[in-house]
Length: 180
Image 1 (cartoon, rainbow, N blue to C red):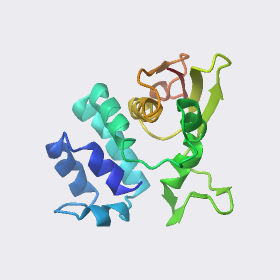
Image 2: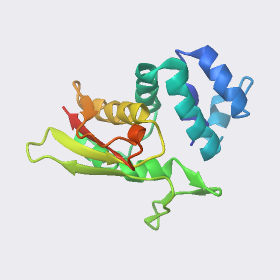
Image 3: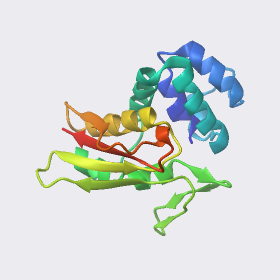
Image 4: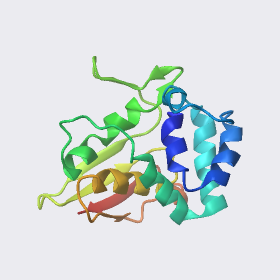
């Protein structure tokens, strides 16, 4: 995960940033340009996201998930909530590395497995989607990320569990209803 997205999400929570940044060896006054090229270890990042739920609660982790999306770049052809949700899996893999290699190469279309997926099924009415998330992140963070990306194009977005399937219960994925 790129450290810039993580740091930007914590602007409203500077003491939390300090706590987690120390664990990620990202302390001190890091230059914003350096943050764009600084990546953090997946196992460390995943452990920290789950600790956040215990430390600050699910609502704050949801808000942090939304904030992660505020500065995330999306391709110029992405111009709607439906388009951004359909592109979530590619964006997710583009923002993660495995053994130093970005997990989606846009030039070859090659996607590496190993961090789960975001699968989108658009509803026929045009203002809702079912998202199946099999990522290693807490469901509160995924809900925030989904809401954050969709709300960049639609003012009123809601994200809720669409089934009883949940990673908190040991299931391999969560299924969400995203409405706008």
